[in-house]
Image (tube, rainbow over all chains, first blue to last red; front, side, top):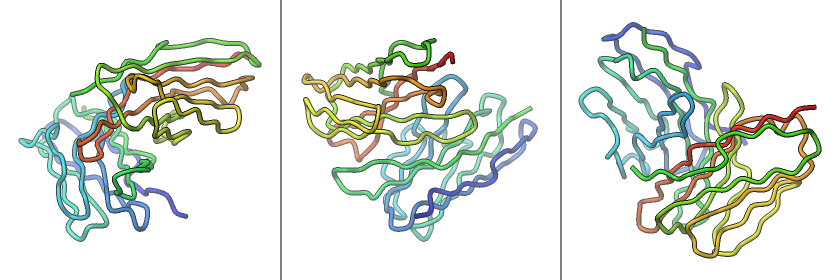
Length: 115
Length: 112
């Protein structure tokens, strides 16, 4: 079974530029998550989708971050404009989406460096 | 947002030793997950726990869901060099839309 795919693996941009990340979840997984992981910390949830609807985006900085999952499969996360403090690893995860036995499986992440 | 406290923050052990780490919260959780993260990679699921008091093993790894539902423990027996990495706990509260909260991580170094 293929895992969660993410691209690009690495991205270096200057502050105030825009950047987009892509995620393809495990086939059949209805729930998709985007996390931000700052160096030395655990992942922090940014947004959670159930199919193509947003379940939780309470910790998403909506003035600069946006995400979509238009067809309920792939998802993109965008930052516009980027700030220095956005430097982090952005992890995508997916889960089957049931109320129990809802293990999340992670992709390899995209390491973003903002200069 | 909710944060889970993991301890210890880091561990340096000799190959062959046993390891214990734990995760605590002020809230009650109905699911606990334990992950291992290698440098440059995403977290990999090790063990999932769904019931208070549950004890589950995966090879040399054993994890327990605390009776109070506010904590969980992970033990690694007979550590080997490839156990090196950062271990994260993640907990899910009821009625939170399946959101998981992650711990602060335990960095494990195994000295051959």
